Length: 244
Length: 96
Image 1 (cartoon, each protein chain N blue to C red):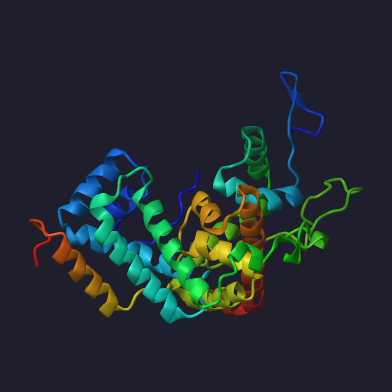
Image 2 (cartoon, rainbow over the protein chains, first blue to last red):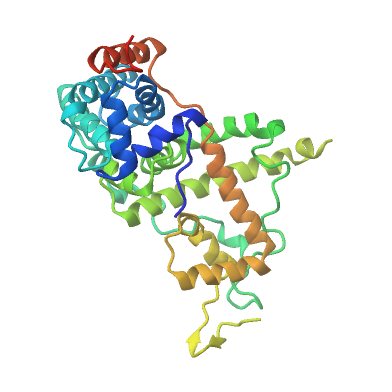
């Protein structure tokens, strides 16, 4: 299983990782003990590690950034006051996200944006249901000696320099943000939760009430479109990037 | 070399074409594919450089997504929360 990207700073990892462990497990019990004993650093780690994802999930229920931030704030206040009563049957992380969702649902209803995500953007609206994610013209036909293989002009080439190279990463990030914003809503939401916020597939399924299969399809289609966009950037910039 | 009809110990060997690999890449990265299919992909990648590039590009896209800036709580709200926590859960290291 591929672990979701860990976005936290090195010191933050231990608490945030422990809080993802199942209820009743040792790392979880240790963390709870620290939190109940007033370990400010552990609590700060959780707030810093999860608030971005909590904010993003809150925005599934309410339409303004201000409302979402209030919901996240109220969530942490509820966590603080109920910490001693948390029985640890689920992971701490699951518990925190469920508190958020309860608060967000109430708030969303009050703001008349009570339509749950899954019915606001139902399945059939997906514009590219079962279509291939790579242009079929880039592959050889069924009569070819290598059916379904890349054609000479269609084959992907190495991205040079790689996307994490400081020489190109800022530019690519800008293109990626634009491309992400243009994805169909369902794909964008799944890609953001999985890849930008580092939630696991199980977590995304629970947050969005998706089946594992649907989550996978949305993630796959979204990522494939983003890759295609970056590929186009590399192609257009070939001369720029190749320059020493 | 294996072809579509090749077999080992009676079990037909799965062969994955490039066109199929690009649709399996997300499950391959998630580790959710059946073992036989994952083995077929590993065999394919040994021989197919363009697909290795494709896989790398997908990984690169995902990593870059993980570095996009994320909105979070304002520092004022964050610090307020930590103060409330410290007031309610006083401990040896948490005392203000």
